[in-house]
Image (cartoon, rainbow, N blue to C red):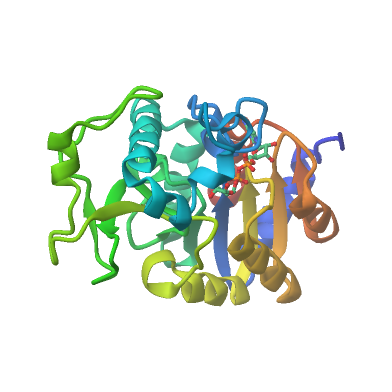
Amino acid sequence: MKNTIVTQDLRSLCRAAMNRPGGILFLTGAGISAESGIPTFRGAEGYWTIGSTEYRPQELATQAAFRRMPWGIWAWYLYRRGVCRRADPNPAHRAVVEAETALGDRFLLITQNVDGLHRRAGSSADRTYEIHGNIELMRCAADCTTARWPIPDGVPDLGKGDELSAEAQALLVCPRCGAGARPHVLWFDESYDEERFRWNSSIDAAERAALVIIVGTSARTTLPWNVVEIAARAGATLIDVNLEDNPFGDIAAKRGAVVREPAALAVPEIVEHLVG
Ligand code: APR
């Protein structure tokens, strides 16, 4: 594991980025919510490592699986929603809100997390791109519209392996066309777009970034890779906060800094350098 960069260098990196034009982007993954008690995806207790009792993990997060067993997939997401609801934002989420408040239009948060903790911490809807969706929302499974709706209150959180009641199933319908509704999350056999997942807006922001602070991601999905590579090519400084080395850390080591500390410790320190 690489040694953490000394504070002074981190401070001068942040100050230098603040003193030149361009956006300040936070790109977050499951690692920022790990200290809130939400499992990551690929960690030892991760959702993709453990999955459900019967299915290989990734099989669950697909449109194909939803078509085959909609109520089984709904039950799994309502179990995960319960886990997210029982968790609270941590100092890293709160520091990101502090950065938004101080930086205004220069600030943008691009998160892979569907757990909703950034929004619950106070991150604004305008400057938060939830590029993999949000576990509190549903949309039309027949795609009659790209609109999203909160999952109706009558649909309960479930325990692991619990099944959804007929009453709850009856509530999971598209308010516009009456077809079935589906969780608003991006599945492995689906593609990003602008309307629902802010693809173009994220790419645009990467092209204009002065600094990208990457927090708690293993660098396994497409849009984050595009954001990091485009920002690096455009001359942005990159800071990678993670407990472990990862491909984004290798890029950040050449273009900025690598911080191998827990997010709840490192992110408030970085924000202090940015706005303090
Ligand atoms: N502080 C900082 N980093 C942490 C912490 C922590 N406390 N705990 C774990 N991490 C790091 C891990 O080392 C790992 O690199 O967070 C990363 C989590 O990686 P994944 O579990 O792969 O999650 P993520 O990168 O967000 O997954 C991306 O993949 O499965 C899809 O849609 C899903 O949004 C998800 C996407």
